[in-house]
Image (cartoon, rainbow over the protein chains, first blue to last red):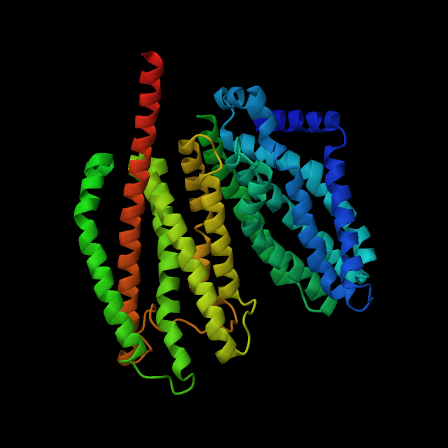
Length: 221
Length: 244
C-alpha cells in the first residue's frame, strides 16, 4: 500500500512537471471527435445516434496516445530495474502506473466528454450515461493498456504495435460503453450495460496488474 | 516425455520421421474428403449446393480456434517450464492459425451472401472471429518486433495467454447472444444434430485440416530450427574469419 502510494505520487509529480503531455491527448480527443461531423454530415437527427460510438472510439484512441510512455521512460534510464529490485511487487507497480495514467489522461477525457456530447446533440439522459460509462470504462483502458505498454517495451515501432495489440482487447469495453449511450438515447434502461462494464473493471483490476507484471518481467530479464 | 524433445536435434529427427506419414495421411484424407464433399454427399433441401461450403468453413473454424488454443498452451509451457521448443511451436503455429481464420471469414462471407443475403453482419460470432484474426496478427507482429528473438517470443507468449479469453467467447457466442450465425450442431452435449451423410465429409475434412496443420507445423518448426543453426554457423564463421 505504501509502495503503491509512493509510486503513484512519483508518477503524478512527473506528469505535473512533464507539462503538456496529458493535455495533448485531450486536445486530440476533442479534435478527432470534431472531425466526424465534417465527414458524415451534420444532420442533427443522425448525430445523436452515432455520437455515443464515435465519442467512445475517439476516447479509446486518445487513451492509447500516452500509453507508449508508461514504462518506456523508466526502462530507458534504468529506473525500471531499480523498481524491480525494490520490495514493491511488479503487480503493485503496474497498478500504480495504471492509476497514474487514469488520473492524468482518463479523468481528463471524462471531463471533456460532456462537451462533445453537446456537439453531438446528445439528450440529457445520454450525457449521464456517457459520464457513467466513461467513469467505469476509462480505468479499464488504463489497466489493459498497461499490459500492452509492458509487452511492447523495447520493440521497434512500439507505438503502432501497441495499438494493434490492445485495440482487440478494448473492443468489449467499446461495445458496452457505446451501447449504454445508444440505449440512453433510445430511451432504454442501461443498467445491464453499466453492470457489465463494472464487471470488466473488477476483472481488469484483478487480472491486468498480474499480466502486466508478467510482461514487465520478460522485458527486464 | 516432452522434455526428451527439448533437444532440437532430437526433435528434428522425430519431425523428419513423422513428416512423410502426416503428409501422406493429409493427402489421402483431403482426397477422400473432397470426393465426399463434392460428389458423395447430398445437397441441402433449403440451401442447395451452397451447403458444400460448410465442409471447408467449419473445419477451418475448428482449426482456427484449435490453433490458438495450441499457441496458448505452448505459451504457458514456455513461460512456466521454459521448454525451449515451446516458443518455436507457438511461433510456427501463429501464421497457420491466421490463415485458417482468413479462410473462415472468406468462406463464411461467400456462404452468407446466397443464404443470408449479406456478405457480413456484425453479430457476436463473426465479430469475435474477426477479433481472433487481429489477435493472431498482433501475436505475429509482436514476435518479430524485437531485435532479440527470445524477447519477442516471450512477449508474444504473454499476449497469447491474455487473448485466450476470446476463444470461449467465440465458442459460446451463438448461445449467449441473439446471433444470425447458427448455433452448434456438433460440439454440444447432445448427439450431433446433423445427418450422417453430411457428418462423414465434415469429419473427413476436419481430420484432413488437422493433419495439414500438424504437417505444416512440423515443417515450419524444422525450418525455424535450421534457420537458427544457420545463423549460429554464420556467426561462428564470421568470428573465425576475423580471428584468423
